[in-house]
Length: 328
Image 1 (cartoon, rainbow, N blue to C red):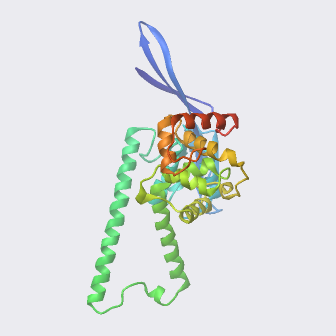
Image 2: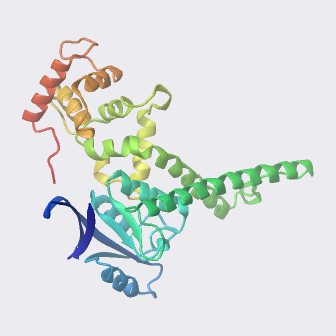
Image 3: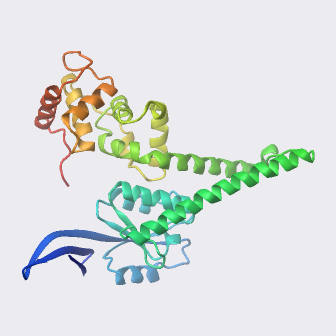
């Protein structure tokens, strides 16, 4: 087996070919679009050196942004992450052009991986299309977790020491209600909340992105919880808060918060079954039955137990109604 690649326009083409008795058989061709992102912090800086380097690396589609690296509210980056699709590669000159914190970098890369896309930095050993790059990313994640654990340990030790010496622990700025200290604490709290959300993003973001606003929140919630253990179920208020946070930071489009349209009563079950099938096209009829029972959905005749024949009927109805997402 021989693997080779060449560049063509704004994409890199990789092909696997096998040789059999002197004949060339092309087994697979994968088209990977290289999407460049260049960022500068101030108007006095120019992104041209980054643009030139990205273009030399094969990018014909390059997005430029002027924003602080510490800011998560970057509209151009949010639009790039929203439209990037399976097989695409987000390319930057250095990782600090994408994120200034390790946690933010890992969040963006996990979001890309959830969409089947990849990330590569030209000047850093991070390339999620290669095993070596994925290993480097895992090392960075472990280092970030160690850093958080050490910070927590030092904080606890410091508070104990202060208490033993008769000092009041905590932030003096908070006790004085200093606005700057309050903003800093609020930002840290938001960062912690966002990190917690990122751990579970794969469980709910794809469903929200695919089903909203076409489906009511109650049904989206039931579909999400249908595949989760009982100790990790979402409530509607928690889910809405998480979605609003991702929308605010540009990781989900604003339209997911739109009002769900009216749906015919008889179309509700076909829509739910289509959503389950759409999330996993290889799922079996029996597995869909199990999911519906876990969601405590009643059959069209009001029974609690589902049969594959009933699911098959609903899938056929969903197809006639055009409820399955069309290929782009």
